[in-house]
Amino acid sequence: MRLDDVQGFVFDVDGTLVHRGPDGRGRPLPGAVEILEAIRASGRRFVLFTNGSHVPAWELARGLREDGLPLNDDEVITPVESALTYLRRHHDGEPVMLFATPATRKRMADAGVALTDDEDARVVLITHVDGTIDLAQLERAARAVTRGAPLLTGSYVPGYAGANGLIFSRGAMVTAAIAKVSSPRPKVVGKPSKVAVDEMRAYFGLPSTELAVIGDDLDLDIRLGRMGRSRTVLVRSGTTGAIDIERVPERSRPDLVVDGVADLLDRL
Image (tube, rainbow, N blue to C red; front, side):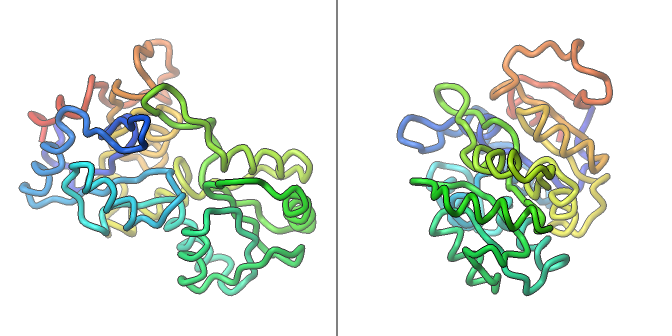
């Protein structure tokens, strides 16, 4: 499979372009810098879509740029951005109970989201959470959801690839706690979801069929690509490792499997 006719590229971050060390800094994987530079030189565009939601997208871009990736501030998408788009379209002006870091709360408030910590919330949204969880707030959130507030989450998978194995998703833990007692299935606004597909389309101004999604996780990245009927590339440098693709149901398989992003350079 060649990629020379693909108009836009969507890359995962952890396990695909970088591995994070114990200090939390990303170490670019072989070919990561070169593949981004080659796409840019071809006149095409790329974006990094990560489920990381602890800081605004531009701040993630700045950190990855400091780590060595050639990124502009607007070349990262997170569930915070796709959640904002979703809220504007479907719940504009409604009070939102938000579980998030202070940086993400500020990003939401600056974007005009009406934040509340009371049971009058019309929406409950969970992104990455730091520090101690307030059980009373969990109860208020569950009551709001029981009364009809949609339960939105940036991610509902166990975690993502880290330097020493899986890093558990705290946002998924909080979401699961609320969902357990309030019953509804959470709506994902990050990867993989129709919301994320819409965000990709809007970013490029292109049909998702003209995009390629490259990542290390079958359940996140490849599923996202298949939702939008994009071309999909699975890299073995992250959570997939030595997975036997032949054992994966055909409907869930990627179009291409490579050891790492360096293997894509001669396909551009």
